Image 1 (tube, one colour):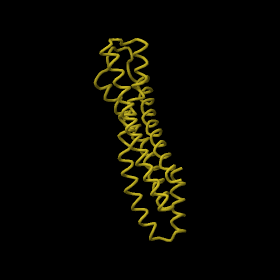
Image 2 (cartoon, rainbow, N blue to C red):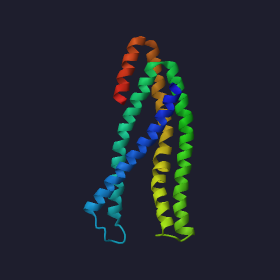
Image 3 (cartoon, rainbow, N blue to C red):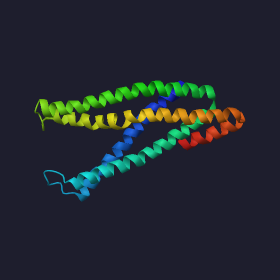
Image 4 (spheres, one colour):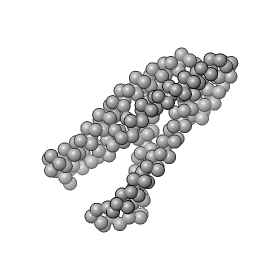
Length: 188
């Protein structure tokens, strides 16, 4: 059960972090529609800086919720049962490693496909180019956000979880399960 839970947390994290980036992008699009001149051929430097700032702020706000939920899940599992937590840690390491490699490679492939169509094939503003732009939109959060975030998540979960397990072993088992249940409710 701990192994399945660890895998589920990795896949939940991947989806949630991509959703945080997506929310930031939608917010930037809304800001652009309301506040910027869309008739210009090229964006000003100030416009570009503003859009990047908006995307970054919304993505960071979304990641705080994910971080708090991940901390609460890790502490809940660590306080629940040490053997359950060992299986959980093994799962997040295994699933996280392979998911990070997959997402980095898939995101890079989508990004490179767009560059190949634009530069090597010279087919900018064609249906093929439109398809690669869609792939690039998915690929960027894959390679730039989620894949690189998995390693710190695994390290963070291991560090705080091991400290919590050490404390839980020395405490009353009934009390640790109650505290673990509280953290689990917080995570939900």
